[in-house]
Length: 313
Image 1: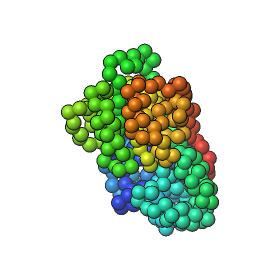
Image 2: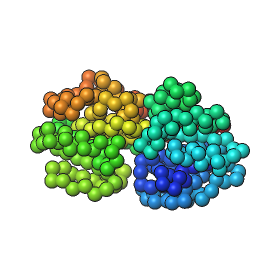
Image 3: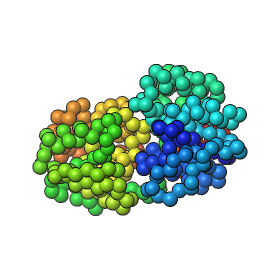
Image 4: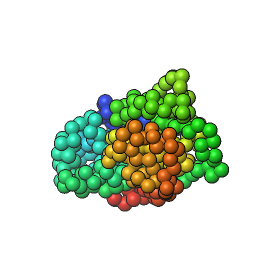
């Protein structure tokens, strides 16, 4: 099958150093490994984390199916991919760029015209179904051995180590991490990673970590703090869980972690005060190892792209 991922909205699309772009490029490669011909349409390519095929400027004429990868790409695909099968892969559907009412209306129209709607985590698919839009869950999947659990690790060897992804995006809620620090201060060690430079005297920050640096980051953390309130599938927390971290997350149903993180295998807090007290007590959830097992159960990239290809075919 000839599959085209469409990511060419002039503002909300394109290829950049983000987790979303990484997911699309790795998914495209997995589909190629399965024997499909795959292209990515974008007029700007600023992704530098790893080498990848150059994007196309237009949809290939021989494409069998065109997949929009952002809600603002959906109207463009409806316009430019006439006569071809079309789909949308929500990661999640981006309510910070379009009102939810408008998203539902657009996807109802898209689905009625034969568009296949997929989501890379359960909650977006559930919300869409509640509004009458048939949606299938298709996870991006995991690399076979990308992040490993360090079995011999000495948890709480000294002060508890708390890690977090640094981001300026409001939905990542990084300010909550700073508030958590104000509550616990020198009782813990504080680590962050992210795309941009970030310097504070009370923490160690890694900018644009390479794979080994990111693995070492997770291995150094006892707790991975994830205050996010609007995510599709939150990759960083899943990577932390695979590496043996205890996830500390908000109770938001849209945080992007409910597919693998539960009240019994993670610290799910209702307030920052509660999160601070449970970290101060060095709480280990009774089934914390189950979080890693649930991430692994999501399956590999090849397994999940096999499912996507089946749906698109």
